[in-house]
Image 1 (cartoon, rainbow, N blue to C red):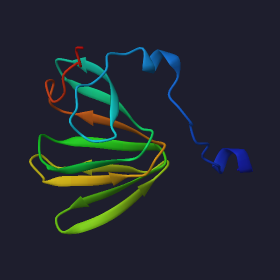
Image 2 (image 1 turned 30 degrees about the vertical axis):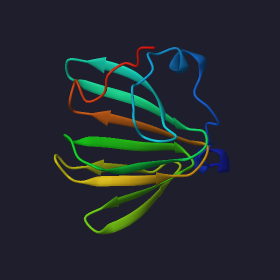
Image 3 (image 1 turned 60 degrees about the vertical axis):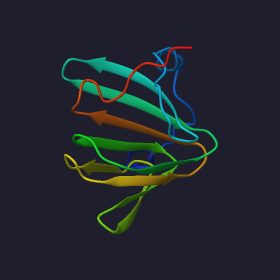
Image 4 (image 1 turned 90 degrees about the vertical axis):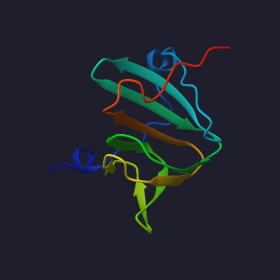
Length: 121
């Protein structure tokens, strides 16, 4: 393998087409999200420009992928740090929260088709 094949390059920001998606309504401090939704689930492109804090909560199952930056995920009395290129899975109904460093981009897939809703001004 060449060095370029083994090196993960960080995406500093989402492309314009992602930022043109509907904005997510969220109460999580520091979070901005863009939503893709279908009857089968949702994909949210999260941006934490100044960092963020997600308080303990629970919902249906979810998958997450850290595009850039890092997420300190708290669940089951443990804290795990996920960095660029790493992924995590959260079980149905599992309580969890997170601390997110500034500049972090995270993509999350939710099994629920109504987990998040569009923000309306």
